[in-house]
Amino acid sequence: MSMLKEFREFALKGNVVDLAVGVVIGAAFGTIVSSLVDDLIMPLIGAVTGGLDFSNYFIALSSTVTATTLDAAREQGAVFAYGKFITAVLKFVIVAWVLFLVIKAMNTMKRKEEAKPAPVAETPVDIKLLTEIRDLLKK
Image 1 (cartoon, rainbow, N blue to C red):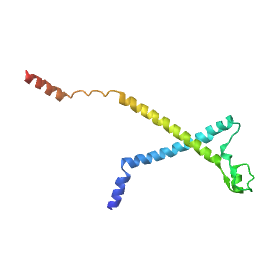
Image 2: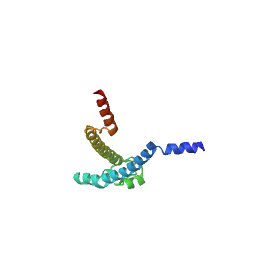
Image 3: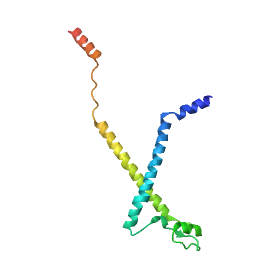
Image 4: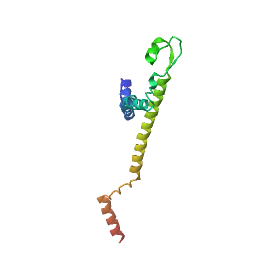
């Protein structure tokens, strides 16, 4: 029974819950970035480069491969699909850039908060009263 109690204490610690929330948000963020790359950026790159589509770039490793699309070529034999790798690298660079911008913005906001002078706490009434009594006693 104590092992169950230890596990419950571990699972409910703030850091574990924060990590779980981070993983879920990270997965959702990854889906957004994948859509950004696949649906917006790669078509733009294709339009600018005259229809360039990295996903179908491959080198046939077998003489039996005669297809022009990656999926069809994989059915015919071994292929070296470097286009998919280029797309994955591009996605990584975009994710890293977006995270850099987010962290930079957060750090800027933190610095602005830290630069604000801390509000001077008003002296409590009892301390003021004791100070007045002390000053009167000194006279």
